Length: 122
Image 1 (cartoon, one colour):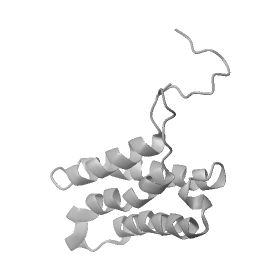
Image 2: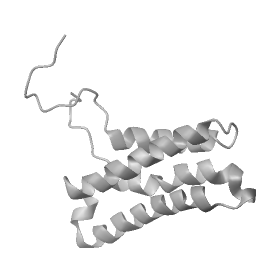
Image 3: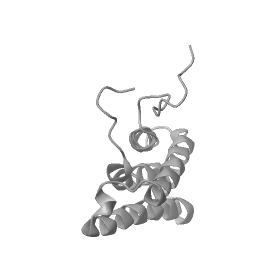
């Protein structure tokens, strides 16, 4: 079954920011138990940060269009960036919490950059 051309709807009825933000937070919590999930958390966090920054340039998130919302947007980007900094420059004693910090650092950006799915899904 093929999709009609010019429909304007994505293939999946889910926003990429919703998927990366929530699954990244879940993988970050799971990395406390199994260090295997740190790589998944890092991948999802990098995708979230990239899409969050691209959304700022192309289709501004609803909150970032307000004057006070710009400060909240950049604070969310700073939180996600600080989590990445923690991943690369963390002390050896905080090694176990790097995935949890990375997953939690993306949650403010997830809350601001996500877009609601139009009523009716696809």
